[in-house]
Length: 264
Image 1: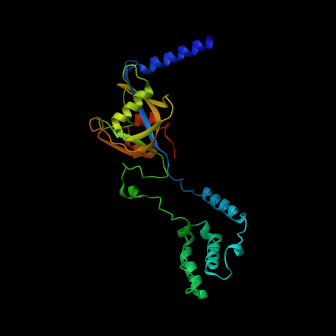
Image 2: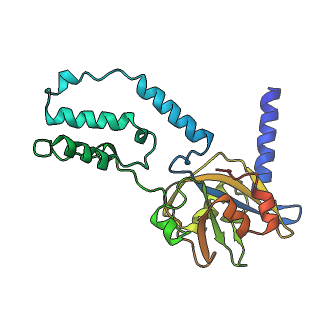
Image 3: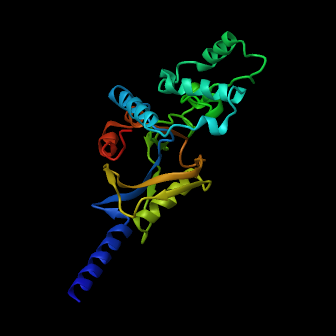
């Protein structure tokens, strides 16, 4: 009974705090730190790249031997194609995509005089998967509004408010409104309804305090859609990395939010 009463009192206290529109004489704002997670794995460098090659080599040499005689007729073009592909897999190209096995395989066939019998040989890369560049058209064009930029990094949505400052989407908390409810409402009002968002929990992950207001931030992830800011509230928006946020926002604002942001 005592525990139930204590929990009830704590819940009522949190609701009173969340629904209050003013804290210590300043207005209360609620916002969402909306992020787009990395789409591709970061490029391995240094020791990580060497380790990736080593484990890929271990996986390759420990695999069961393919029973070639059961699947291909001896001396057939299919058997020769498979042999060439197996040589490519066993070569350094299997771990280094910068090499070009297509030319090596074609030269090998020409030397053996098998061009007339064998079918045109495609590289292993073409037969398995076409590797696309990590730099997208949005990266090349410098389009900071696109979600298809910086695929290896976590991007965050920031908007330019009426005062000309870059901030996370935020707004005032109305009377008897919870922080997470106000945060979602302000995000919808600021960025439009054509964006699907999942907010992580109901409690704030950080705050920023000024002489005029105290802003509490709820963490969120974009699931689909794109921001379409209301011109009456903000003048611009962009999806930026952690380093780009540091150069865009005010120093005091950055000091308040830097520990919330991912380093990836």
